[in-house]
Length: 148
View 1 (cartoon, one colour):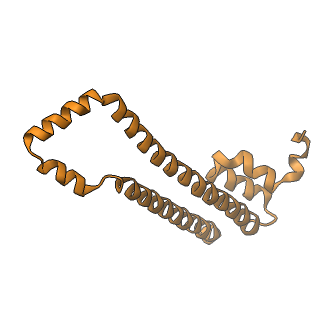
View 2 (cartoon, rainbow, N blue to C red):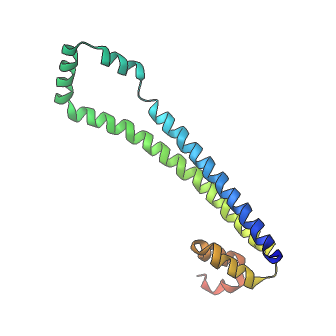
View 3 (cartoon, helix red, strand yellow):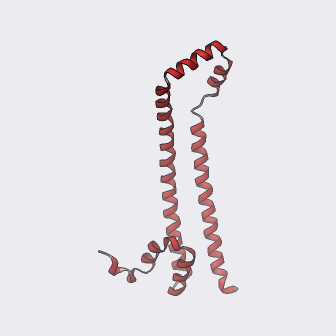
């Protein structure tokens, strides 16, 4: 059991890092969604609800007549915000994924120094989806022939 203590510490560290990244990303998304919801002015919605029935029917008739124009306006407004949220998410997650990737390489190199078999086992077991990117960095001498 004591042989696995460094692995457990490593797993705990990685888990804490992943939770921190997830929290940070969710916080950014929630902030972006709040910004998106601010485009709807509640005062105007209340004023509209307080209008007389005749005015509401007249505006509804105009809305039906100008339906295509309303769709275009709503599409422009929502597309701009969605694109903004998407770009922010891509930018932040790209930085965070690169940082996490580098920290994994560093941890594997330092915790399992001079233990190539254990490094391979760890990468195969815990990081199978990133194996193709991690192994050439850990063992460049084994992958020199693959370069063009």
